[in-house]
Length: 461
Ligand code: SAH
Ligand code: SF4
Ligand code: F3S
Image 1: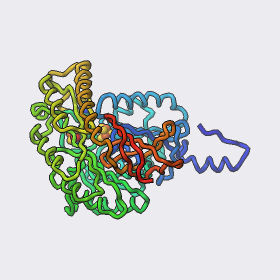
Image 2: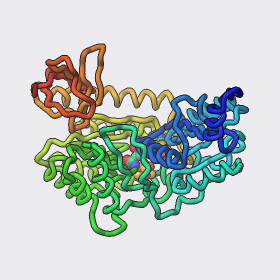
Image 3: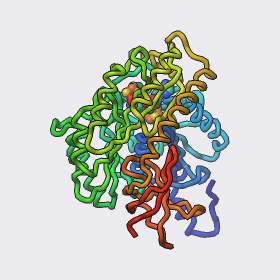
Image 4: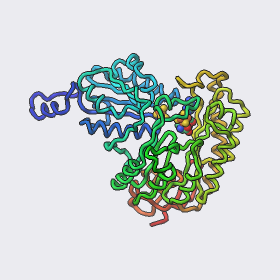
């Protein structure tokens, strides 16, 4: 809430500048969900700032409050409605509210019924129209939607991205998803799959290097489904091209879908040293029957063939995965197939989720649902087996030297916190008083290993 100092012109003028529509042109944004949502928020922030809005760190100071939401699992969605209820506390202070992202697209105008104080409801496919939506908001409209663009061919490219990480820059190269896995909301919330032209990706990569970034992460729900609309580059060629931009030290890409995973990707990682030696290739289940029910369109064997390509690379490529436990009808034997697949692959990390029934998805109508406690038991069992795999995997690094990018400092322990090319967390000490800057690189020798992190000491002085 702003108060006016009636005695002074200076504050009255400031007031005139900051107010255009009864509330301040200040905004607060909170983001839930995946890295793509986080990066969308960077673009939304850049767009808002370009439209004359100022970002504030406290929602109490904001004229416009935006929530960029996730609906991948029920818990994520509930978080949003919890926040929406908190909005009530803030109404009556002249604030405006916007719900963006996957819950916005999924619930649409129903959000206005549940939370009448919300003024904008927009899915990610409509963010290109944000300036127009903001203009309507400023003109006094109170029910503005961006929900009809899921069939668009266009991507949300903007030069106004407000990058929040000064060293790792994100570039979304594929938006949306056409795969329609039986359990997943993404094709309904993010719309059809569309790729950004390779020239535009390369131009942004070069701009980022000029701005001082050394690590670039290419993003897409299925990043390797990339299909250059100009037909110039395949995904593997684009990877190699981005990796070849002078000044880049690390290129990551997330998430790869097994269906579109090619040998050329492995060959590119082998050939281009700046491409990080890590592939996140979610399998979801080790059972061919469950995979078919999930509509993943591959079998256990087919998936393991891709893993064999990765293992045959000259570089040691780290592999990570996502798993869903308790999909309707999953038997004890099928769960065991997932456990043995984890052991066969030897992942360095697994993100394991309890199946969550989602609106609009075919799986919600499937019989043989599994009780929550049973899902928890299955998750626990898999995680224990995976912990053992990681304990062995990480132990292999003992005594090795590896390059680490500094991400922060743990002052209490006198340690530097960073990440290896394989995306492993490395905590290390340096034999000097001044700690290396965030974003710099150091060679580190590993002296101790854990199932989720490595400990070492800098060896390059
Ligand atoms: N496009 C990626 C995954 C994106 S969603 C892929 O296909 O691999 C991220 C992860 O959330 C998925 O890999 C899956 O493991 C999990 N997930 C998606 N829908 C879910 C649901 N309904 N219940 C539980 N986990 C889910
Ligand atoms: Fe969801 Fe499947 Fe698309 Fe991944 S590939 S985003 S799991 S529908
Ligand atoms: Fe969530 Fe949407 Fe990402 S559902 S995981 S924010 S694509």
